[in-house]
Length: 351
Image (cartoon, rainbow, N blue to C red; front, side, top):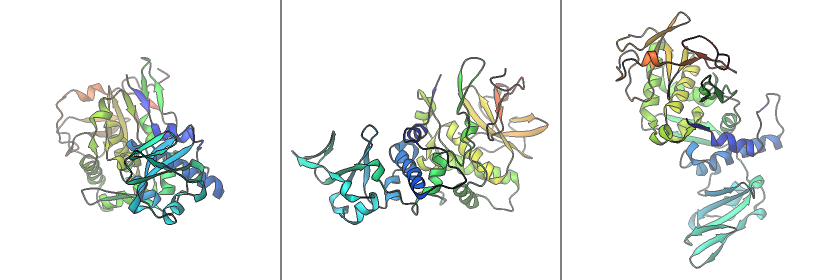
């Protein structure tokens, strides 16, 4: 049995970040919210792209350590890339709070941290002195030529769950097994960064079947399947932006991203849970040459397998010919949506 792990969620809670309210935030509170989000992502590489720190800060600095006990950020930068005014002005509210390491025996020392070699500067600042720049954005370029861009405020909206459905992230089944609630991580319709991405993948005049296939082609074509995430001891749950930034995921993240794009396109679908696996089932007039159609609440859905590059909805045949009979739960994502036992029709936790 896997344990559920969402490190960014833990980091945001530890930083004291709460859900954004629509009635507005003061500049101080908004800066804290942006800071918590950026620091959370900077300190957890598994959830973001490799040049994330450089993009969000506008400098060549790397975050080497976030000491949560000290609430200190440790940065390193090549001496040739450092400018005492511009670099620190971009990173810190008060550059007088920045403390630099000292060189000794060919290394650089600062507090309990050691940086090997002396070609780089090592410095630290209090986390609360880090200056988030709301005008900056994060860009991920894919080999397909498609680009995903999100602003810092959009990043923060994901981090505090404002633009995903949210709710309980896990549930207990009647077999006393803990199961991740994937629907909680699906992005709500109208999320700006995914809406921009959607327009690069599909055309308005495409029918829903073609849109669903194009979106599946994008997800399976640009996001690598991670054996580590799939077969590790933890269930690593990623929001859709985190899947796009990291570029890798298992069936959980791939399905979350695909379902989030279906949400933006307005295509009806369901999440279908199998033992140790999850996929999306899409409504539409697809062929059924692979026998992967199900009928649920009088609607025909076709399974879209996100872990197979080139999977054709209604066409690609799986090695497991009996997979339909292995569906355990089904879910329509939404605010506090229920997960339904596929065979009994009962809500999980009420079985």
